[in-house]
Amino acid sequence: MAAPGGAVTRVLGRAAVLTLAQGIAALGSAVGLILFSTLMTPEAFGRGMLLVSLGMAGSLLATLNLEAVAVRVLPGPAGRAYRRVLARVFAICGTLGAGLAFGWAVLGGWSVAQGAVLAALIPAVALVRVLARAGTSLGAPLRGAVPRLLARPLAFGGGALVLWGAGAQGQDWMLPVLLLGAMLGAGLLQAALLRRRLQTVASGGRAEPRAWLIAGLALAPGLLFLEYHRHLVLIAAAPGLAPDAVGHLSLALSLAALPALPVIAVEMALTAPLARAIRQGDAAALRARLTESAGLRLAGLALGVLALWIGQPWLDLVLPDPGPVMPLTWWLLLPAAARGLLGNPLLVMTLHGRTPGLAPLLGLGLAGNLAAIWAAAAMGGALAASVMAGVGYCVLWAILWRRCCAGCGIDTSLTVLRSLERPRFARPLRKA
Image 1 (cartoon, rainbow, N blue to C red):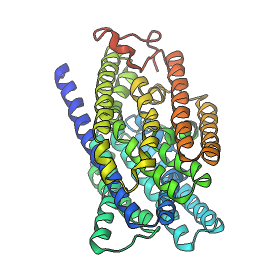
Image 2 (tube, one colour):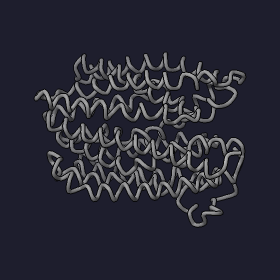
Image 3 (cartoon, helix red, strand yellow):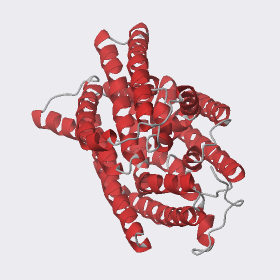
Image 4 (cartoon, rainbow, N blue to C red):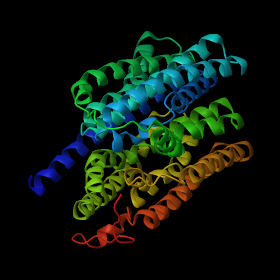
């Protein structure tokens, strides 16, 4: 049996690497977008960022979120059957999703070229997300996550530097095209790094496509909140904002993601150990992982917010129009704070197999939040939309946390730090 200290060291090492990759990704994306905003007209920048957000959020159509159950199914006896089902769903739904996106874009007034880029971006983003989730499920989060994390900074940062060096003006199509190329490259790298891991999945289990699809669809709104919340905010707010305000909001969303980096990295590094502890019914191991997660989340969130506060004077110097951006950023930090203080109850409920009943809650919460953001943007501008986005996220996250406590008997919040030796749970641990 491995020593506890060695396990903790490995977790910390993975979290450190993922935090570094997350930091590079967010910083590179933010700097690239800042440079692009100075090289493009406000209207072009707003249209380009809207296309990127539509491609990121629309990628869910290509898989129906079937990859959400990978962490529970892929390492088990039905791993190979799950891969076959996922491949069929991706082939069918990816084609349909791309076609629908193209038709919607052209009918909505976008050019044929813009519609084609959006149609290609949707399956590319979905494939990279699927491979990242597979790496996390098979105990190789770095191999799956790092290429995905570095795609955006390579696309936006590298593209902006080339454009700036050439002294050219940016066009709206450049942002989604650069992202498409980076996603395709990331997918090829992920496939190469994970090839051996994917070949070792078990083949003796029985396929349960109906149950897997139901579970994935139930968690689809959760994926949108966890990974694509800022894209949804931009999509919902854009109809009520001027083009330059769309640019300000997109920059604020990128900056607000920086303090969340350590929190997300800890979650990614601890996903496989948490899944193993829940599958084996090991209450002691689960308590230890939750305690480690709480401590690392608290420290990382505090350092991230402090770094952004200290760096604000520098941001005021480099941002092309800092006045409207920073007030939006502070309100958009609320989702990171909720995730750091309450943990990730949605992940625990997924690992515990308690997904039934989540679909109505998450679907209604998502729809209500997006409607409120749209209305706030139309009536109060970007600042009102930012307030509504931050508050709405916190409300839904608190509801999910309470549901996790009641349904799984597991408290993912910082209350586990009351006693480092015996963390407190909402109820006695229940077997999955």
